[in-house]
Length: 480
Image 1 (tube, rainbow, N blue to C red):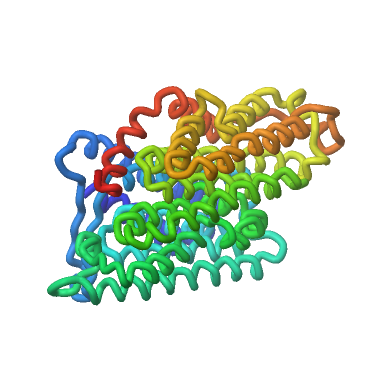
Image 2 (cartoon, rainbow, N blue to C red; image 1 turned 120 degrees about the horizontal axis):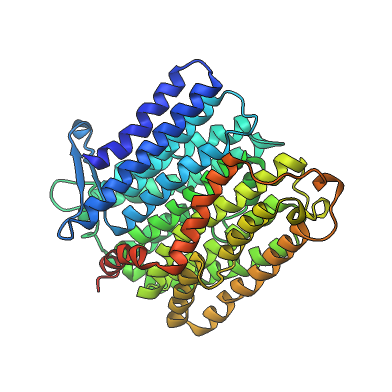
């Protein structure tokens, strides 16, 4: 029942907001209330999950049975982690936009809630066709958010993103239909039946079809070209959705499907996928160092961190997979925190150019402290959330290939270079004309940043709960 509510609540409130006339204050309240209610349900589902070690919570409905779709939703450790991440971040993303001049708020927030519903569907469904439907539905809200509320050249950039992901999705659909035909007896889209179809002769091209769809969504090098421009032109709340949650769909797909379904193909192709992932780490980090605009720097830092997560996944080691699951949570929290800090700066200074900023710490010491914690979490300082995840990821990559691990380890060094350089230029030095009137955090901004910092420190100091959720899922994926 709880899993059904996780899907239905954001959908119902999304439809309600679409049906309303534009009412800025009421729209904000409805959207925030809906997202908080969904988060509350996810926390209750977590306790139900933890109290039921012998079986995972499942929701079934025959609503689409006549179409051959098994509408079954379930939660295991991997799904639970990503549902918690989604429902935790969406209220923060919604509330962070209250101070911005967003027009047509009812439609804007309705699209965010619709996207939340689709994301939860992707992470909980146990039917391949339903997974594909949710996968494509999640593309629609961010498409309209980026086009209607985006910046310069938003239409061209968003269409490029839409085309990339649509083509990748079509390759995945063809592979899904092929696997459906191969299932024994009465054909089925259920995951459990697909896992029985392991013909080595077909695995290679099936792997490539799935890999393309997931590599574009993450994205990893060289399928990333849509990412920096879209992150820059999309409204900040849209960028948070893309970077904080939506890219996790690609990592989730590799963990849930590619690793269990295509072991023979992975023996041939995993090394090349690792090389692409590690190449993306170095490429994105070097590009980030050269950035002069804060939002683009954060976008490339996200690309570098995702490369390390992907490398850990394709290492197919226990440490690599546990690290990837934990780092998905940490990356989502950190990147949303960084984009919130970016928006706070732009609201006050009207610019994201690093050279035009400086001396903010002397004007806003509380903001500088929050920004520092989030920045240190992003560069994996011990006792922050990314430290545990990146340590496990690098250990997993090392267990696979020591040379690749040495290159992947550059993410820590290069990440410290561009993040500390950025922080020093923005927060210290001479006060600029744009920052002379910079004010410290408002109560609303404190409400948004406090839970971000709290999670950064919680995972960094006591990651046991998150690793405990990840461990059984990792063993199931690897069959150990």
